[in-house]
Image (cartoon, rainbow, N blue to C red):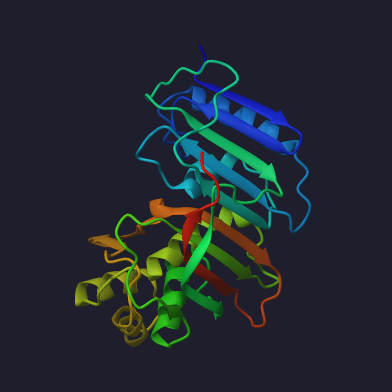
Length: 295
């Protein structure tokens, strides 16, 4: 009995796995390398026209669920096609389709991944908007982290450029995100390889991180071009936080942005080359979701 199975049909690639696919270098089983190689070959045969999304769907019997963006794209980054300007991600309702062959459940649960050219969300749809913004400039250069996006949105919130709900999102309540990155000639260009930074940075901006001397000092080392005054302003003005917990974790000089992204069960990231200024601009919304269909 094999621990995974990959199949490709037309514009769809499907994967069944007996263990959640892990980030490159963190795989606990050698066979995950083989899975990723098979996935890369299957995805490479897809034709994805410009402006057409690659839609990912993740489901699992594991009640712990998981962050669908990471599960579908970031954890398998080395398998993903390049140059895709739009992606969608979605998590199912804990009832993945039956695999066509028996799968060894190495971790005790079945994990299902589906990638479809031009696909849409199938289990959930937007309900009520809880935050929205339009063409917020991301002035800090991309440093490989979520910090430039986080700071851009916190600065925009402090300037009153972001509309937010008056009450925080209820604990354990799922939500969705829709993002447009208005790129410059310099980029970004690849939605799959930019998605984790923009999704995590966006969600983190709506967490309840409070200003303190220690936090300012630690963040200042990571954001050397930001003045202390502007950093304090961004931390002091969190509007009405949508998430009641902090997203920024520090340990000495170490800074980790860790938002509550496991509750983000649907999302879309679209890169369009239409910035009106010298920096990339960010538009988007956070919203509650309601089911479209039953399992």
